[in-house]
Image (tube, rainbow, N blue to C red; front, side):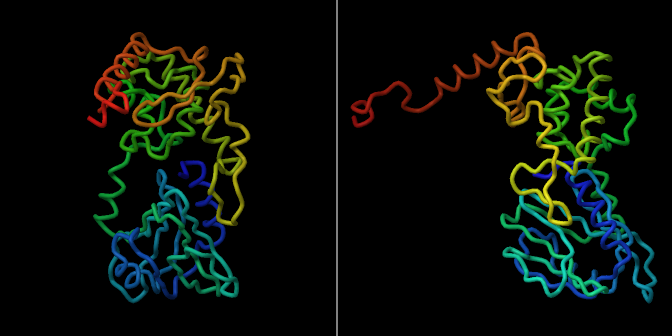
Length: 308
């Protein structure tokens, strides 16, 4: 799923390509990922796209008001790409790709097409207070927050640091890839509690997270399977991953094999030598596994036992 660097890459490409263009018409196919399809068909035609921005993992196409309308409330088209979503301007003459679900006719003769095979994304027209309420749901941007604000948002919570980095109410835009990469860079195990990290660890994590995100943006994000930018090109940061999806491979710092563990319900890749587990973590995991084994139905029974 595209994270902050990938969405920033798409936003910058779209800003260059379609900012200032007006939407003439909207055609919608499958619409189960759209909050209110009728609002797109009603509100988007006649609107100029003022800017294209990234907001966390969302694309935000900010719209100008219609010239004849007296309304002054701010409005935008909110787009989440999900796992396989693509939003790209294309010439009208270019055949539409399979799974093209939204087509916006632009005033320069091109079409802005949303393509999504799995339809795990989201699209919504929002205006006024609805737009502000939606945006207030999310935490601070990791590239805009100061160290003091970052430290306060992490240190005051007893959740695992991996969970906190993924929590969009704490930091907007960070996902599994860049959480793992940043924790490795900062030498922090993903299972540490945020409240137990000291000031030095938090400062190191803050610098690591910002540095990795900025480098990933320069390299146009990570293309693991489906991500393409606004021009249909893959990113290149996956070549620089140090732990993510490298289970069993040697750590580039100490050569220890990278391990994978479930933290906060997500796969977490880490180096057991560089990122020492918090006290009691291993025992807690062993106890949990034993409890799960005891709870499994038919555990330890033979085939004859099950047929009785």
